[in-house]
Amino acid sequence: MTGHPGTAPRGSHRWTRVVPTGETHGVTTLELFFDLVFVFAITQVTAFMADDIGWRSALRGLVLLALLWFAWSSYAWLGNQAHADEGVVRAALLVAMAALFLVALAIPEAWGDEGGGLSAPVVLAVCLAVVRLGHLSVYAVTAAGDAGLRRQLRRAVVPVAAAAVLLIVGAVLGGAPQTALWALALVVDYTGIYFSGTEWRLPSARHFAERHGLIVIIALGESIIAVGVGVADLPLTVPIAAAALLGLTVSVALWWAYFDVVAPFAERVLAGRSGDDRVRLARDSYSYMHFPMIAGVIYLALGLKKVAEYVADTEHHALSDPLTGTGLWALYAGVAVYLIGHLGFRLRNAGSVNRPRMVVTVLLLVAPLGVQHLPALAALAVLAGILVTMLAYEVVHFAEARARVRAELAHE
Image (cartoon, rainbow, N blue to C red; front, side, top):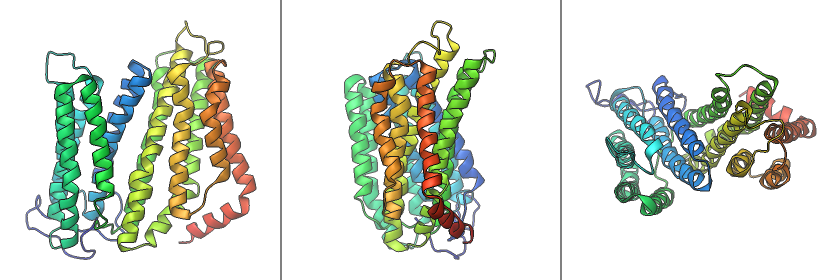
């Protein structure tokens, strides 16, 4: 989503000017600051699901994650169009940060306001509307002189505005209608944006790939925090140390799976495309394929949080009591969903499928049936073992191809 690389800033006032980006544009510090609010919001979602863990809260958490993801993703595109730390885009990002912070604060009462203050569901819905519609308004300013991009924005405002109305109406109604209307809002938003056209602009492949790589790191950080916070006030025992290290092992394995080869390779592919072809690739492999990766990591964090609770609670013995129900499925299926998104990301960019990872994905989806009677700590150890085995196999089996690709990327 860009202006015209190399052109001068538009507007004379510091708060109204627009500074277009170019191919070498990178992530700004303000965008990283924006991400801190996003990570607080997803931390709130994890806590929301863990507070009343079950299938209903897990599905509601998915709805919240999907709403947050498009709020974040829209500003990733805007920051690629114009410098996020300059002029009107800076002002827009600061307003969006404030609104998103209120969204995060409202998440614990997203379904069931406790009274005594503002209606949390309404605050959440209105603030999300501010984030999304404000984004399109500022985008229109940055698109001055670009007729194609302005056409694209006019088409995009229809699903975004419709989704905002559904969110607000659902928040007012509450209960089952709220869930139904919020889910419908997601369908309208995601499908509407996908089919709204490809007249967006993406001047910097580097910025876009880096932006999404950093958000993967942030999500993985949440999985580490989930274990650390759960046992922070307890004496360091062998089970606690084991749970912490196993959780870290799982997070490192997911980092390795993404960043070792596939992420830098995908950035190179994106940089080699231009025009609508680049926009379609960015939309598919980053804006859409990265959502299951982020959601998968958050569900993993939920599972790790429950393991940490078992380790910390003297009534649940991590060396004997099994992790059951939603917590167990979140642990394994979260990683499986991450790998599904990752497989789609690779397929869209490289046109090939990593068969070992496909096998592991299927294994993870059925594994809870086999480990449901194991102690919680053992179930986590099995998960870590599966991922480490997968990576060890790849390092050995694909050693030559991996070394060649990494050498090529290092010399670019």
